[in-house]
Length: 376
Image (cartoon, rainbow, N blue to C red; front, top):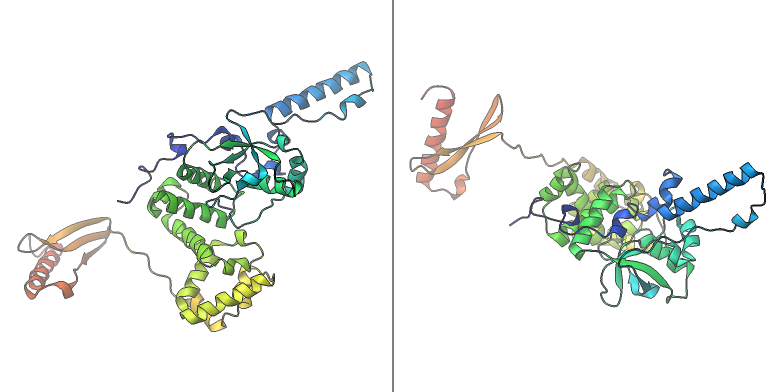
């Protein structure tokens, strides 16, 4: 039975709330030093209190005329306060989570330099949210950019201990919580959001319709396109490795990959995959709009793909009433498509006996006569 949005419960649906570390952290690590955010939102409560105290001290000094304030210039912000359940984990015991939306994507944000400076003192960073140890490492749910900054700053010292806190829930609930975060922030790219939806579906086994109901701003068609893009990246990573920023690829690129795979014979498509592997190995990169040319896709193929007619969307009737034959068994359906548009949906005659076809024809003819007011 297909699960629905009502059946599917997550931390956000009050079974298990995500740990406060995940809730209080920015929507993604990129938001940590977002220049569009006010400075106040970048400080912890203790840091804000410290800053206000320093400001008050400076004002008091100015009021008394005392200009000897050099003793205050070397003061620093206090480390983020300890959290309930926090513990230390060696850097070598942390690793990538197979269901993180940014898996295989960029390892640094725009704020990486500043983050690395802070990472020199690991206790100055907020705790990294992790899952229980598996195969010798704790998968990182939230704090992936922090982890890469720590690795860069402490290269060669994998024993440095990092503040961590366990995610309060199962891995499936973590997938749902991360997907909620990705879909609710502009920091995640379209491809990263698509990957988050793909992880949500394959881990929690929910339908596209249930996903669309869970995220009202996404239509079922949009969910379908996003899932196609994520699956194409998973199936053919080499076609994304040739891009300058694979995680920034548009959803349409993934859908074009699917169309290309369907349009070409298998041997020709495999040849394109081989060229993509060679380009990626040589370090050649291009924009999504230049990828097919770089992969030597024939121009006629591109034209065929672009001109391929879109599959028409099925018309969903407003109402549908069965048309019954002589034995009171439904043989067709009378459907209302609009106020002035009706249709009769006929059965597949190839699977019917002569007697069944005769009964269905007579029942449909009778429905047409009633429609025109010839019979009551």
